[in-house]
Length: 438
Image (cartoon, rainbow, N blue to C red; front, side):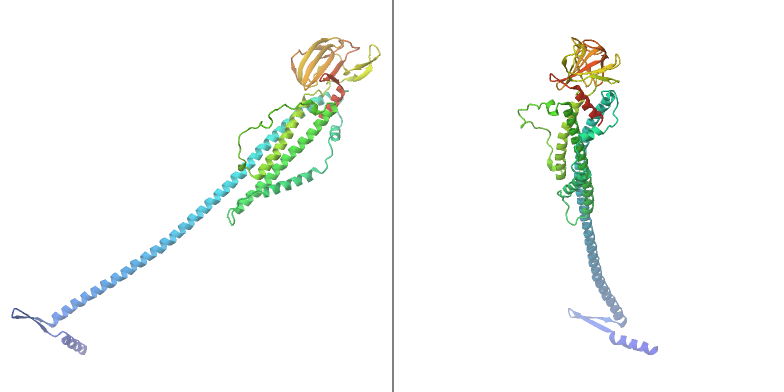
Protein backbone atom coordinates (compact mmCIF):
# COMPACT_ATOMS: atom_id res chain seq x y z
CA UNK A 1 0.00 0.00 0.00
CA UNK A 2 2.81 2.35 0.86
CA UNK A 3 4.72 1.39 -2.28
CA UNK A 4 1.69 2.32 -4.49
CA UNK A 5 1.31 5.61 -2.68
CA UNK A 6 5.02 6.39 -3.26
CA UNK A 7 4.67 5.71 -7.00
CA UNK A 8 1.68 8.02 -7.21
CA UNK A 9 3.58 10.75 -5.36
CA UNK A 10 6.56 10.40 -7.68
CA UNK A 11 4.25 10.45 -10.74
CA UNK A 12 2.55 13.62 -9.58
CA UNK A 13 5.84 15.21 -8.64
CA UNK A 14 7.25 14.38 -12.06
CA UNK A 15 4.36 15.79 -14.15
CA UNK A 16 3.13 18.50 -11.83
CA UNK A 17 6.38 20.09 -10.61
CA UNK A 18 6.18 23.54 -9.17
CA UNK A 19 6.49 25.92 -12.08
CA UNK A 20 6.93 29.64 -12.46
CA UNK A 21 5.61 31.60 -15.39
CA UNK A 22 7.52 34.79 -16.16
CA UNK A 23 5.99 37.77 -17.88
CA UNK A 24 7.95 40.84 -18.86
CA UNK A 25 6.21 44.13 -19.66
CA UNK A 26 7.73 47.58 -19.95
CA UNK A 27 11.06 46.37 -18.59
CA UNK A 28 9.37 44.86 -15.60
CA UNK A 29 9.48 41.12 -15.14
CA UNK A 30 6.62 39.46 -13.43
CA UNK A 31 6.19 35.79 -12.62
CA UNK A 32 3.46 33.57 -11.46
CA UNK A 33 4.28 30.60 -9.34
CA UNK A 34 2.09 27.51 -9.85
CA UNK A 35 2.27 24.92 -7.19
CA UNK A 36 1.64 21.25 -7.69
CA UNK A 37 -1.84 21.49 -6.24
CA UNK A 38 -2.68 24.43 -8.44
CA UNK A 39 -1.57 22.51 -11.50
CA UNK A 40 -3.54 19.46 -10.43
CA UNK A 41 -6.63 21.58 -9.85
CA UNK A 42 -6.19 23.29 -13.19
CA UNK A 43 -5.67 19.91 -14.90
CA UNK A 44 -8.81 18.58 -13.26
CA UNK A 45 -10.76 21.63 -14.41
CA UNK A 46 -9.41 21.36 -17.94
CA UNK A 47 -10.04 17.59 -18.03
CA UNK A 48 -13.56 18.12 -16.76
CA UNK A 49 -14.17 20.78 -19.35
CA UNK A 50 -12.84 18.53 -22.09
CA UNK A 51 -14.94 15.66 -20.87
CA UNK A 52 -17.99 17.89 -20.78
CA UNK A 53 -17.28 19.09 -24.31
CA UNK A 54 -16.81 15.48 -25.46
CA UNK A 55 -19.98 14.38 -23.71
CA UNK A 56 -21.94 17.28 -25.15
CA UNK A 57 -20.62 16.60 -28.66
CA UNK A 58 -21.38 12.91 -28.45
CA UNK A 59 -24.81 13.61 -27.00
CA UNK A 60 -25.58 16.08 -29.79
CA UNK A 61 -24.45 13.57 -32.43
CA UNK A 62 -26.47 10.74 -30.94
CA UNK A 63 -29.51 12.92 -30.44
CA UNK A 64 -29.31 13.96 -34.09
CA UNK A 65 -29.13 10.32 -35.10
CA UNK A 66 -32.05 9.52 -32.81
CA UNK A 67 -34.06 12.35 -34.29
CA UNK A 68 -33.13 11.26 -37.81
CA UNK A 69 -34.07 7.65 -37.01
CA UNK A 70 -37.29 8.80 -35.42
CA UNK A 71 -38.13 10.93 -38.45
CA UNK A 72 -37.31 8.01 -40.70
CA UNK A 73 -39.60 5.72 -38.70
CA UNK A 74 -42.33 8.31 -38.76
CA UNK A 75 -41.99 8.64 -42.54
CA UNK A 76 -42.08 4.85 -42.91
CA UNK A 77 -45.15 4.62 -40.70
CA UNK A 78 -46.78 7.55 -42.51
CA UNK A 79 -46.03 5.99 -45.90
CA UNK A 80 -47.43 2.65 -44.72
CA UNK A 81 -50.52 4.39 -43.38
CA UNK A 82 -50.98 6.31 -46.61
CA UNK A 83 -50.60 3.11 -48.60
CA UNK A 84 -53.19 1.40 -46.40
CA UNK A 85 -55.48 4.40 -46.72
CA UNK A 86 -55.02 4.39 -50.50
CA UNK A 87 -55.82 0.68 -50.62
CA UNK A 88 -58.88 1.32 -48.47
CA UNK A 89 -59.96 4.11 -50.82
CA UNK A 90 -59.46 1.86 -53.82
CA UNK A 91 -61.41 -0.90 -52.11
CA UNK A 92 -64.16 1.56 -51.25
CA UNK A 93 -64.24 2.87 -54.81
CA UNK A 94 -64.29 -0.68 -56.17
CA UNK A 95 -67.10 -1.61 -53.79
CA UNK A 96 -68.97 1.54 -54.68
CA UNK A 97 -68.52 0.78 -58.37
CA UNK A 98 -69.78 -2.77 -57.75
CA UNK A 99 -72.77 -1.42 -55.88
CA UNK A 100 -73.50 1.01 -58.70
CA UNK A 101 -73.16 -1.77 -61.26
CA UNK A 102 -75.36 -4.11 -59.24
CA UNK A 103 -77.88 -1.35 -58.69
CA UNK A 104 -77.97 -0.48 -62.38
CA UNK A 105 -78.34 -4.12 -63.39
CA UNK A 106 -80.98 -4.70 -60.71
CA UNK A 107 -82.91 -1.55 -61.66
CA UNK A 108 -82.75 -2.53 -65.34
CA UNK A 109 -83.93 -6.05 -64.57
CA UNK A 110 -86.73 -4.82 -62.31
CA UNK A 111 -87.77 -2.20 -64.87
CA UNK A 112 -87.97 -4.83 -67.61
CA UNK A 113 -89.82 -7.23 -65.33
CA UNK A 114 -92.26 -4.54 -64.19
CA UNK A 115 -92.98 -3.44 -67.76
CA UNK A 116 -93.59 -7.02 -68.86
CA UNK A 117 -95.68 -7.68 -65.76
CA UNK A 118 -97.85 -4.65 -66.47
CA UNK A 119 -98.34 -5.82 -70.04
CA UNK A 120 -99.22 -9.33 -68.87
CA UNK A 121 -101.58 -7.94 -66.27
CA UNK A 122 -103.35 -5.93 -68.94
CA UNK A 123 -103.58 -9.01 -71.17
CA UNK A 124 -104.85 -11.20 -68.35
CA UNK A 125 -107.45 -8.60 -67.33
CA UNK A 126 -108.66 -8.28 -70.91
CA UNK A 127 -108.80 -12.05 -71.34
CA UNK A 128 -110.56 -12.38 -67.99
CA UNK A 129 -113.13 -9.76 -69.00
CA UNK A 130 -113.84 -11.69 -72.19
CA UNK A 131 -114.07 -14.96 -70.29
CA UNK A 132 -116.44 -13.38 -67.79
CA UNK A 133 -118.64 -12.11 -70.62
CA UNK A 134 -118.70 -15.54 -72.26
CA UNK A 135 -119.35 -17.19 -68.89
CA UNK A 136 -122.23 -14.82 -68.21
CA UNK A 137 -123.67 -15.52 -71.66
CA UNK A 138 -123.13 -19.23 -71.08
CA UNK A 139 -125.09 -19.18 -67.83
CA UNK A 140 -127.86 -17.12 -69.36
CA UNK A 141 -128.20 -19.33 -72.43
CA UNK A 142 -128.03 -22.52 -70.40
CA UNK A 143 -131.14 -21.37 -68.54
CA UNK A 144 -133.09 -21.67 -71.78
CA UNK A 145 -131.87 -25.20 -72.51
CA UNK A 146 -132.83 -27.09 -75.68
CA UNK A 147 -135.79 -26.14 -77.83
CA UNK A 148 -137.81 -28.83 -76.08
CA UNK A 149 -136.99 -27.30 -72.69
CA UNK A 150 -134.55 -30.01 -71.56
CA UNK A 151 -131.08 -29.37 -70.24
CA UNK A 152 -127.96 -30.74 -72.01
CA UNK A 153 -126.61 -34.08 -70.85
CA UNK A 154 -123.13 -33.92 -72.40
CA UNK A 155 -121.72 -30.47 -71.95
CA UNK A 156 -118.42 -30.86 -73.83
CA UNK A 157 -119.17 -32.97 -76.88
CA UNK A 158 -120.11 -30.20 -79.29
CA UNK A 159 -117.24 -27.86 -78.44
CA UNK A 160 -114.75 -30.72 -78.77
CA UNK A 161 -116.14 -31.41 -82.19
CA UNK A 162 -115.90 -27.74 -83.08
CA UNK A 163 -112.32 -27.28 -81.98
CA UNK A 164 -109.75 -28.61 -84.47
CA UNK A 165 -107.27 -31.14 -83.24
CA UNK A 166 -103.89 -29.72 -82.31
CA UNK A 167 -101.17 -30.68 -84.83
CA UNK A 168 -98.66 -31.16 -81.99
CA UNK A 169 -99.00 -31.70 -78.25
CA UNK A 170 -99.34 -28.40 -76.43
CA UNK A 171 -96.76 -29.34 -73.79
CA UNK A 172 -94.23 -30.00 -76.53
CA UNK A 173 -94.87 -26.61 -78.12
CA UNK A 174 -94.59 -24.85 -74.76
CA UNK A 175 -91.33 -26.67 -74.06
CA UNK A 176 -89.95 -25.43 -77.37
CA UNK A 177 -91.15 -21.92 -76.60
CA UNK A 178 -89.55 -22.04 -73.14
CA UNK A 179 -86.24 -23.07 -74.71
CA UNK A 180 -86.50 -20.26 -77.25
CA UNK A 181 -87.29 -17.73 -74.52
CA UNK A 182 -84.34 -18.87 -72.42
CA UNK A 183 -82.08 -18.63 -75.47
CA UNK A 184 -83.33 -15.12 -76.18
CA UNK A 185 -82.72 -14.07 -72.58
CA UNK A 186 -79.29 -15.71 -72.43
CA UNK A 187 -78.26 -14.07 -75.72
CA UNK A 188 -78.98 -10.53 -74.59
CA UNK A 189 -76.16 -7.97 -74.36
CA UNK A 190 -74.35 -8.17 -71.04
CA UNK A 191 -72.00 -5.63 -69.48
CA UNK A 192 -70.20 -7.84 -66.98
CA UNK A 193 -66.56 -6.71 -66.58
CA UNK A 194 -63.90 -9.39 -66.50
CA UNK A 195 -62.63 -10.62 -63.14
CA UNK A 196 -65.20 -8.57 -61.29
CA UNK A 197 -66.29 -9.50 -57.79
CA UNK A 198 -69.89 -8.72 -58.77
CA UNK A 199 -69.94 -11.28 -61.57
CA UNK A 200 -71.31 -14.04 -59.37
CA UNK A 201 -74.15 -11.87 -58.06
CA UNK A 202 -74.88 -10.49 -61.51
CA UNK A 203 -74.90 -13.99 -62.96
CA UNK A 204 -77.43 -15.13 -60.35
CA UNK A 205 -79.53 -12.05 -61.07
CA UNK A 206 -79.39 -12.72 -64.82
CA UNK A 207 -80.31 -16.38 -64.32
CA UNK A 208 -83.35 -15.47 -62.22
CA UNK A 209 -84.40 -12.77 -64.70
CA UNK A 210 -84.03 -15.19 -67.62
CA UNK A 211 -86.19 -17.81 -65.88
CA UNK A 212 -88.85 -15.21 -65.11
CA UNK A 213 -88.71 -13.92 -68.69
CA UNK A 214 -89.31 -17.46 -69.95
CA UNK A 215 -92.31 -17.89 -67.63
CA UNK A 216 -93.74 -14.52 -68.66
CA UNK A 217 -93.30 -15.44 -72.31
CA UNK A 218 -95.05 -18.77 -71.73
CA UNK A 219 -97.93 -17.02 -69.98
CA UNK A 220 -98.24 -14.61 -72.89
CA UNK A 221 -98.18 -17.53 -75.32
CA UNK A 222 -100.82 -19.31 -73.25
CA UNK A 223 -103.07 -16.23 -73.35
CA UNK A 224 -102.56 -16.02 -77.11
CA UNK A 225 -103.25 -19.74 -77.55
CA UNK A 226 -106.45 -19.66 -75.47
CA UNK A 227 -107.60 -16.50 -77.24
CA UNK A 228 -107.03 -18.00 -80.68
CA UNK A 229 -108.90 -21.14 -79.62
CA UNK A 230 -111.78 -19.05 -78.31
CA UNK A 231 -111.80 -17.01 -81.53
CA UNK A 232 -112.02 -20.22 -83.55
CA UNK A 233 -114.91 -21.40 -81.39
CA UNK A 234 -116.79 -18.11 -81.66
CA UNK A 235 -116.26 -17.98 -85.41
CA UNK A 236 -117.58 -21.52 -85.66
CA UNK A 237 -120.59 -20.53 -83.57
CA UNK A 238 -121.30 -17.58 -85.83
CA UNK A 239 -120.78 -19.79 -88.87
CA UNK A 240 -123.38 -22.17 -87.47
CA UNK A 241 -125.95 -19.37 -87.53
CA UNK A 242 -125.40 -18.95 -91.27
CA UNK A 243 -123.93 -15.46 -90.78
CA UNK A 244 -120.13 -15.38 -90.95
CA UNK A 245 -118.26 -13.14 -88.54
CA UNK A 246 -116.72 -11.14 -91.39
CA UNK A 247 -120.19 -10.05 -92.50
CA UNK A 248 -121.01 -8.61 -89.09
CA UNK A 249 -118.29 -5.96 -89.12
CA UNK A 250 -117.47 -3.27 -91.61
CA UNK A 251 -113.86 -2.02 -91.52
CA UNK A 252 -113.60 1.63 -90.58
CA UNK A 253 -112.84 3.93 -93.48
CA UNK A 254 -109.52 5.60 -92.68
CA UNK A 255 -108.05 7.88 -95.33
CA UNK A 256 -104.83 8.75 -93.50
CA UNK A 257 -103.91 5.36 -92.12
CA UNK A 258 -100.19 5.98 -92.72
CA UNK A 259 -100.28 9.19 -90.69
CA UNK A 260 -102.57 7.94 -87.93
CA UNK A 261 -99.89 7.42 -85.32
CA UNK A 262 -99.24 8.80 -81.87
CA UNK A 263 -98.59 8.11 -78.21
CA UNK A 264 -95.97 9.19 -75.67
CA UNK A 265 -92.29 8.75 -76.50
CA UNK A 266 -90.72 5.80 -74.69
CA UNK A 267 -87.02 5.38 -75.32
CA UNK A 268 -86.46 1.85 -76.57
CA UNK A 269 -82.88 2.11 -75.35
CA UNK A 270 -84.20 1.64 -71.83
CA UNK A 271 -85.54 -1.80 -72.72
CA UNK A 272 -83.49 -4.94 -72.98
CA UNK A 273 -83.56 -6.66 -76.34
CA UNK A 274 -85.43 -9.61 -74.89
CA UNK A 275 -88.10 -7.24 -73.55
CA UNK A 276 -88.37 -5.69 -76.99
CA UNK A 277 -89.12 -9.12 -78.43
CA UNK A 278 -91.57 -9.71 -75.61
CA UNK A 279 -93.45 -6.51 -76.40
CA UNK A 280 -93.58 -7.42 -80.08
CA UNK A 281 -95.25 -10.65 -79.04
CA UNK A 282 -97.56 -8.77 -76.71
CA UNK A 283 -98.60 -6.46 -79.56
CA UNK A 284 -99.57 -9.51 -81.57
CA UNK A 285 -101.43 -10.93 -78.58
CA UNK A 286 -103.15 -7.58 -78.10
CA UNK A 287 -104.45 -7.67 -81.67
CA UNK A 288 -105.74 -11.18 -81.09
CA UNK A 289 -107.47 -10.02 -77.89
CA UNK A 290 -108.99 -7.12 -79.83
CA UNK A 291 -110.47 -9.58 -82.29
CA UNK A 292 -111.65 -11.82 -79.46
CA UNK A 293 -113.29 -8.89 -77.68
CA UNK A 294 -115.04 -7.86 -80.88
CA UNK A 295 -116.27 -11.39 -81.56
CA UNK A 296 -117.42 -11.79 -77.96
CA UNK A 297 -119.37 -8.55 -78.22
CA UNK A 298 -120.95 -9.80 -81.44
CA UNK A 299 -121.95 -13.13 -79.93
CA UNK A 300 -123.24 -11.37 -76.82
CA UNK A 301 -125.59 -9.26 -78.95
CA UNK A 302 -126.74 -11.94 -81.39
CA UNK A 303 -130.03 -13.73 -80.62
CA UNK A 304 -128.84 -17.22 -79.69
CA UNK A 305 -131.52 -18.19 -77.21
CA UNK A 306 -135.10 -19.39 -77.22
CA UNK A 307 -137.85 -16.85 -76.52
CA UNK A 308 -139.15 -19.23 -73.85
CA UNK A 309 -137.11 -20.34 -70.84
CA UNK A 310 -139.86 -22.64 -69.52
CA UNK A 311 -140.91 -26.04 -70.82
CA UNK A 312 -142.05 -25.61 -74.42
CA UNK A 313 -142.49 -27.53 -77.63
CA UNK A 314 -141.69 -26.47 -81.16
CA UNK A 315 -144.85 -26.77 -83.24
CA UNK A 316 -143.71 -25.32 -86.54
CA UNK A 317 -140.35 -24.89 -88.27
CA UNK A 318 -138.75 -22.38 -90.60
CA UNK A 319 -139.38 -22.54 -94.35
CA UNK A 320 -142.21 -23.89 -96.46
CA UNK A 321 -145.06 -25.51 -94.52
CA UNK A 322 -148.76 -26.28 -94.90
CA UNK A 323 -150.75 -23.23 -93.82
CA UNK A 324 -152.90 -24.17 -90.77
CA UNK A 325 -155.85 -22.16 -92.06
CA UNK A 326 -155.86 -22.77 -95.83
CA UNK A 327 -153.92 -26.03 -96.02
CA UNK A 328 -151.87 -24.63 -98.88
CA UNK A 329 -148.07 -24.50 -99.04
CA UNK A 330 -146.80 -21.25 -97.55
CA UNK A 331 -143.56 -19.76 -96.38
CA UNK A 332 -143.04 -19.53 -92.64
CA UNK A 333 -140.25 -17.13 -91.66
CA UNK A 334 -139.92 -18.16 -88.02
CA UNK A 335 -140.42 -20.84 -85.40
CA UNK A 336 -143.58 -21.52 -83.40
CA UNK A 337 -143.30 -22.62 -79.76
CA UNK A 338 -146.25 -23.69 -77.64
CA UNK A 339 -146.25 -23.52 -73.85
CA UNK A 340 -148.66 -22.84 -71.02
CA UNK A 341 -150.87 -19.80 -71.32
CA UNK A 342 -149.23 -16.50 -70.35
CA UNK A 343 -145.79 -18.10 -70.14
CA UNK A 344 -143.13 -15.36 -70.03
CA UNK A 345 -141.69 -14.39 -73.41
CA UNK A 346 -138.10 -13.14 -73.06
CA UNK A 347 -135.65 -11.21 -75.23
CA UNK A 348 -133.20 -13.57 -76.93
CA UNK A 349 -130.38 -10.98 -76.83
CA UNK A 350 -129.78 -7.47 -75.49
CA UNK A 351 -131.23 -4.69 -77.60
CA UNK A 352 -133.69 -1.83 -77.94
CA UNK A 353 -137.41 -2.30 -78.46
CA UNK A 354 -138.08 -1.21 -82.02
CA UNK A 355 -141.85 -1.75 -81.94
CA UNK A 356 -144.40 -2.90 -79.39
CA UNK A 357 -147.99 -2.94 -80.64
CA UNK A 358 -150.46 -4.70 -82.90
CA UNK A 359 -149.75 -5.91 -86.44
CA UNK A 360 -152.14 -7.58 -88.85
CA UNK A 361 -151.62 -11.34 -88.83
CA UNK A 362 -149.17 -11.17 -85.91
CA UNK A 363 -151.53 -9.81 -83.28
CA UNK A 364 -149.71 -8.29 -80.37
CA UNK A 365 -146.05 -8.18 -81.38
CA UNK A 366 -142.73 -6.94 -80.04
CA UNK A 367 -139.72 -6.25 -82.28
CA UNK A 368 -136.23 -5.73 -80.84
CA UNK A 369 -133.23 -4.24 -82.62
CA UNK A 370 -130.02 -5.95 -81.44
CA UNK A 371 -127.57 -4.02 -83.61
CA UNK A 372 -125.27 -5.38 -86.32
CA UNK A 373 -128.37 -5.69 -88.56
CA UNK A 374 -130.24 -8.16 -86.30
CA UNK A 375 -133.92 -7.74 -85.40
CA UNK A 376 -136.09 -10.30 -83.57
CA UNK A 377 -139.87 -10.50 -83.69
CA UNK A 378 -142.19 -12.06 -81.06
CA UNK A 379 -145.82 -12.41 -82.20
CA UNK A 380 -149.27 -13.65 -81.03
CA UNK A 381 -148.63 -12.37 -77.50
CA UNK A 382 -151.29 -12.24 -74.85
CA UNK A 383 -149.74 -8.93 -73.77
CA UNK A 384 -146.43 -7.11 -73.89
CA UNK A 385 -144.73 -5.43 -70.94
CA UNK A 386 -142.21 -3.20 -72.76
CA UNK A 387 -142.54 -0.06 -74.81
CA UNK A 388 -140.89 1.31 -77.93
CA UNK A 389 -137.38 2.69 -77.28
CA UNK A 390 -136.88 0.68 -74.11
CA UNK A 391 -133.53 -1.11 -73.71
CA UNK A 392 -133.81 -4.75 -72.70
CA UNK A 393 -131.28 -7.35 -71.60
CA UNK A 394 -130.93 -11.03 -72.41
CA UNK A 395 -133.88 -13.05 -71.08
CA UNK A 396 -135.67 -9.97 -69.83
CA UNK A 397 -139.43 -10.50 -69.93
CA UNK A 398 -141.03 -8.57 -72.77
CA UNK A 399 -144.50 -10.16 -72.85
CA UNK A 400 -146.66 -13.20 -72.23
CA UNK A 401 -147.55 -16.08 -74.51
CA UNK A 402 -151.02 -15.78 -76.04
CA UNK A 403 -153.22 -16.39 -79.05
CA UNK A 404 -153.65 -12.96 -80.63
CA UNK A 405 -153.68 -12.39 -84.39
CA UNK A 406 -153.84 -15.16 -86.99
CA UNK A 407 -153.27 -18.09 -84.64
CA UNK A 408 -154.80 -21.50 -84.05
CA UNK A 409 -153.77 -21.75 -80.38
CA UNK A 410 -151.59 -20.32 -77.64
CA UNK A 411 -148.03 -20.06 -78.92
CA UNK A 412 -145.31 -17.56 -79.79
CA UNK A 413 -144.12 -16.94 -83.32
CA UNK A 414 -140.38 -16.11 -83.21
CA UNK A 415 -138.43 -14.57 -86.11
CA UNK A 416 -134.85 -13.44 -86.67
CA UNK A 417 -134.32 -10.85 -89.39
CA UNK A 418 -130.77 -9.99 -90.52
CA UNK A 419 -130.40 -6.90 -92.69
CA UNK A 420 -134.00 -7.22 -93.80
CA UNK A 421 -133.80 -10.93 -94.68
CA UNK A 422 -135.37 -13.67 -92.51
CA UNK A 423 -133.01 -16.25 -91.01
CA UNK A 424 -133.75 -19.65 -89.56
CA UNK A 425 -133.96 -19.14 -85.75
CA UNK A 426 -133.26 -22.82 -85.17
CA UNK A 427 -129.71 -22.40 -86.41
CA UNK A 428 -129.17 -19.54 -83.96
CA UNK A 429 -130.62 -21.52 -81.06
CA UNK A 430 -128.41 -24.44 -82.03
CA UNK A 431 -125.41 -22.09 -82.08
CA UNK A 432 -126.45 -20.93 -78.60
CA UNK A 433 -126.18 -24.52 -77.46
CA UNK A 434 -122.53 -24.45 -78.52
CA UNK A 435 -121.98 -21.45 -76.30
CA UNK A 436 -123.53 -22.80 -73.13
CA UNK A 437 -122.02 -26.24 -73.71
CA UNK A 438 -118.49 -24.79 -73.98
